[in-house]
Amino acid sequence: MTREQTEIQNRTGVAPMRPGSGIYDVLLVGAGLANSMIALALLRARPDLLIALVDREAQIGGNHTWSFHSSDVSAAGLELLRPMLEAQWPSQEVRFPRLKRVLDTGYNSMTSSRLHATIMQSTGIDVFLSAGVSRVESDSIELESGSRLSGRCVIDGRGATKTNALALGYQKFVGLELELHEPHGMSRPVIMDATVSQHDGYRFVYTLPFSPTRVLVEDTYYSDGSQLNSELLAERALQYANSKGWRIAKTVRQEQGVLPIALAGDIQAFWAEGEQQAARSGMRACLFHPTTGYSLPDAVALAQRIAAADTFETRRIDQIVRRHSTKCWQQRSFFRLLNRMLFLAAQGEQRRDILERFYSLPAPLIERFYAARITAGDKARILLGRPPLPIPRAIRQLSESQAMETAHRREQGRSHG
Ligand SMILES: Cc1cc2nc3c(=O)[nH]c(=O)nc-3n(C[C@H](O)[C@H](O)[C@H](O)COP(=O)(O)OP(=O)(O)OC[C@H]3O[C@@H](n4cnc5c(N)ncnc54)[C@H](O)[C@@H]3O)c2cc1C
Image 1 (cartoon, rainbow, N blue to C red):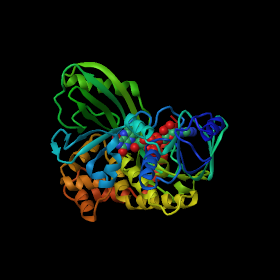
Image 2 (spheres, rainbow, N blue to C red):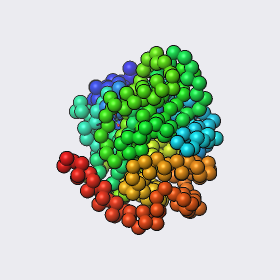
Image 3 (cartoon, helix red, strand yellow):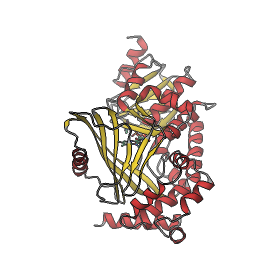
Image 4 (tube, rainbow, N blue to C red):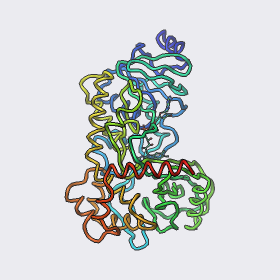
């Protein structure tokens, strides 16, 4: 170990992957999806920078499978993701009571274990794991061990924080990665099987066939409440696998999530909340798809934007991220309107009917929807025709500010009993 490495190890209690200068150019707090993508994008675009990635867990990226449609990211974004891809499929499928459809849109999955391996193999990033961060400032961080690391640009990507500025619904799920005794026979992902019995809002099962005998089965809900009964959902995922006649050799891995679905909010209030010294990234910067809660495409886009910055200094990057997040929020108001119809106006099984109708629309529109790049024509197409809800009335009743009140009242009702 060099003298510099020993010095860092003595200061932090953690051995860095390569010698550091003491002051990092970019200090990334939280080695989750968003900050890992920033580290990798910087490594490509600015190999001259000294980068550190710090996480409280022993593994980069936690325990995740992140998936995305091929049309969600740019060609350069896909190149950045390529080393972490576990599987790629040329098509995907949805199943509803009256509609079964194969879409020729590619689907891809990356895993946290590949993300971990990719970053650990790259020589340009100092990685500090099992290093909980207790304080984040604009030019330094304090670890729970009491040590400090300094950085000219500090980016806080420690995941979502509690906020009063957004009214939310939830996409929640438990996924089981199963090894089967015999091949399952699936050739493509089924991203929504909504032919299953409906509970707790809109229910569907999401299935990814990773190999002929390996499959990820996620029991998923679009629900009003954030409570997750993981045992019940895991049981339902197993029941689904059994209903397909699959004999399970073992459960390899379990993952679960409660993702935010944006119904309404105030982005200025979001950014004004709490004491914030560092720049932010990922969910912490409100960068997620309003209707799915997915954040991978936004994480890649933000990483590319940051890697192209002129100056790496906390204030400058904070300015870039805030502007980008605010613009995304403003451009995505139509998604929040649809979410309000789905969560606040639709009754009973109408949620499933809305999704079923959506999936009968042209494939390029569906692709633009998931990529959050819909056009004025797409919006008209989504609202016109014979939707399952009386749309004009729903729109009149569900302005953004009314929806904030309704959602907060519902939230209070839940917490009081
Ligand atoms: C199980 C699951 C599956 C998902 N699947 C998809 C998907 O398929 N596609 C998609 O686009 N989105 C998906 N999402 C949604 C979203 O993309 C993820 O939540 C994503 O990981 C969010 O990225 P992030 O970087 O903002 O936060 P995270 O990836 O959660 O990263 C935050 C990191 O900060 C660390 N941290 C927190 N506090 C501290 C601290 N005090 N000190 C040090 N480190 C700290 C955490 O350990 C973590 O590694 C999924 C979410 C979950 C939970």
